[in-house]
Image 1 (tube, rainbow, N blue to C red):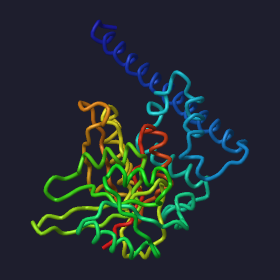
Image 2 (cartoon, rainbow, N blue to C red):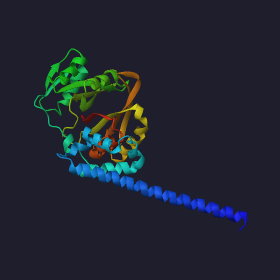
Image 3 (cartoon, one colour):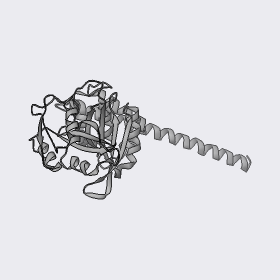
Image 4 (cartoon, rainbow, N blue to C red):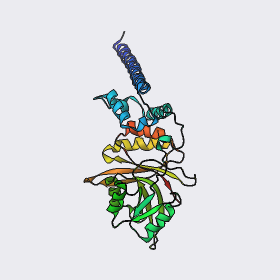
Length: 301
């Protein structure tokens, strides 16, 4: 055998060894995926008092942490993005939810106390009248400052408050976004009010609970959440997953954090009328666990 033929044989052997190594690695990867899913299924089936909201609870996040231990990166490494989306669908179905509509654990009933607090102005009065189309028999409490407006909901004096959250001239109003975060408020409804200067202001009816009220389909539903910019590598995956789960993104804002002006968060607003919300909640809990829900709200026309 000539030296040239020996070199060809050695090269062919190296290629074959590489292919065999790839096959072994793929088999091990598949076994690790199956093992994780088997363990997850076992824990879910044995958990006492298991409820559908398990997938968006701290308990589920802690369960995932216990699986991964110090190797939490194994979950993103083991599964492709498409596999993670499909896994989220499967887990949501395990919780007994369909692929469309608002799941039962995110549906709210109107409270007996339907007092609405806000700082009186012509625009806020218009917003209140529009929100009254959705909110049955509300009462009004006028406050002297926006902080007092938020405090009235935080301490339970009122169930709702009205805040301006954006306008066509400035975009997201950062000061009011900080109030929403400070007082742990969630968006229940939104509406747009025109101003004499030909701009428009978006007002939000805020509350303490996260969830949605049943309204006619003519009122579009939006899902808004925040994702720390330090996890910007997750943003592209989240946007892809939202598209796959029928929740096209309408807007992304970068908002400075109140406790660190140099850091910011992404506020993502997605259409939720036909979204697989259960699967989305599972995906975010697994793949972007530092997300914060801001609102699942109806847009009042």
